[in-house]
Image 1 (cartoon, rainbow, N blue to C red):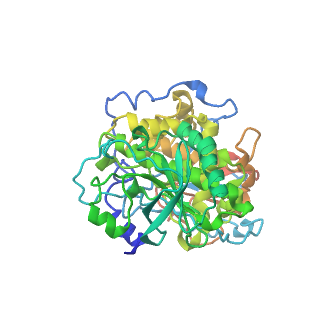
Image 2 (cartoon, rainbow, N blue to C red):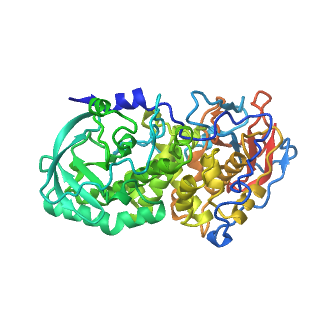
Image 3 (cartoon, rainbow, N blue to C red):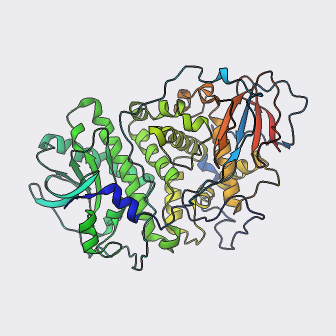
Amino acid sequence: MKRSLSLFLCLLLFALPILGCSGGSNQDSYYEDPDDGWNDDPYYSDPTKAPQSYTTPAPMPTGSDFSGRDDIAYVLIFNPNIYKETLNWNEKLTTGSIGQLIDVSMARADELEPFEPEFKPYQQTSSGELFAGYTGELDLNRAGGIQPIYSLGDTRQFYAGDEYRSLQTFECVYAGSHCYVWSTGGSVSTAQANKIGSEFDNKIYDADVTTFGTPRYEDEGGKIHLLYYPMTDGLLGFFWPVEIFATGEYLTEQEAEYYGANQDLAIINLNSDLIGYPQYEEMIFATTAHEFQHLINASDLFYTVDPLSIGYISTWLNESMSGYIEEKLYPGVKDTEGHYEAFASSYLIKHGQSMFNFSTEFNDIGVYGSVYLFSQYLENLAGGDVFRNIHDYWRNSYSRTLCDAEALHNSISSSVAAQIEAAYSYPGNVRFDSADEEWMSKLILDFYMSLLSFDAGDPAAYAKVQAQTLLYDEINPADIEGGGRVIAATKDGTFEIPADADYGLLYIGLDSNFQPVTGIVYK
């Protein structure tokens, strides 16, 4: 029986929130943090975790206009609200009539053509949208005790396929300390399997577990099952979150059969068509590390105090961490995959797409480059332990208000978090559901500001970003998503906020080197 994987995602993956904070970002009053000891005293408060190379900007004052300024070469316009992928609709804020104020001829300085990716990302957008009508229990030990042990030459059936799922017979071609490599139809030779399995056992496994945490089923003797089979051209591999559940936890046996979902095992699906090509070898390894982080992220769910209402870390942060481990283990692989180039030439990013909105419309995958750059920024800001801190907080805080903002805020040293808080003073007409969300908004603004110039001590990937390639290139108003921004060149060094611009947008004047010359200006 064959079933469409994409159809299954559309039918079933829509109820459990990815982001635990609910509601919009423009509220009338601040959320009052509960007295649970977490929000008031960050979980990891050791100030030594921040690298010495990171320096936050001097605190920016706020003002209501750009009067008397003739030194504004560019203006950054930021929507500070939080775009939430669990909501059916998120309000955008429009810049109003900026066409007469900006110089669109300055845009696309390198005349970059829209980037066409060779490899198609299989994003985790739906990974937390599970449990429509779910009434079962999520128990870490529901897998039925000790996991089965396999040996070389053993065969068994798995559901496989990236579009249509069907039962296929696989042979175990590698049995290592942390993984099994499975091949169908002789798609992986013994020599190739040994190389793949050894790379996972000796490098990828320890790096991912140390950086993020342990996968589900490990405490029951479980290993990671790497399934290699032919896939759609351009697809590197994927992790399917529904397969991390034990039988009966989410799907009945009949539903699992209908949709072609394996149960009770930790599985990563990989494209065997790329094996045997030296130019793709590191990319295959990097993809395995990337998908393993997704698997660990899905495992976090089973430790939370209320899985049904909390769900997973949301897509943008989930993908950010997966991209981080790729570049950490295989430097330069993101260039090979074209993600930085995609960011620099992205139409959506230039026009105000939020990093929180993991949409890849029109095959525009610039948001991948954006979140991968953010992961480099976050490591530079808070140290390499920050990603493990995020996962640990998700598993161990037992917070009932758990969301990305809370986890991030409580995973960074209190001294560095305070620097971010103090660096940007928001006007009173910008409101959030919680103090954590306001802080995360400032963190994202600081990230955007840090991208505008490359200095010693910045992440190496920043050298691949030229601010002029990010300029807004239309005379029409820009509709900016929450957490998004546009950067526009002025005509004569002056700028004024259009009368028809939405309230809530924040403006920062920049000089010809993209350095701030004003504080935050608002309408």
